[in-house]
Image (cartoon, rainbow, N blue to C red; front, top):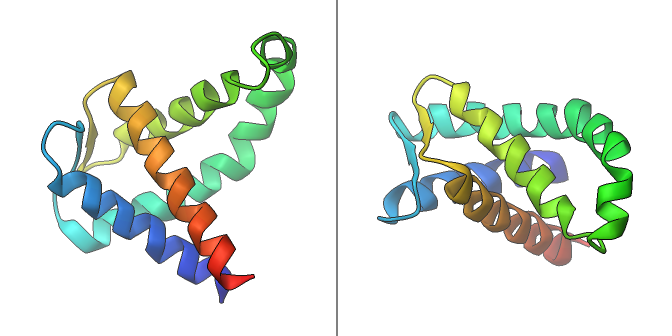
Length: 112
């Protein structure tokens, strides 16, 4: 149940980011594309993020963990290949990944 709530929270963040001008994230057909993007983000975070984190471990240590934000932004930027989901650039991906991280943290905080 918690996984479904997280998925809808992330989809809601995608819709929120799409409605804010200047962020650089847009969703064409609102709800179905946002839910598919949320599911795809979860799959990418589950499969690709550990591999990238493993190979970038020395850089993460040198930056005291701040390179993790770059990894999250890269995973978020990969969603731009989804039809109907647009990300204008790396800065938009970084902002979007920060908003998604805060939303997932808040869901975890209130459900635990």
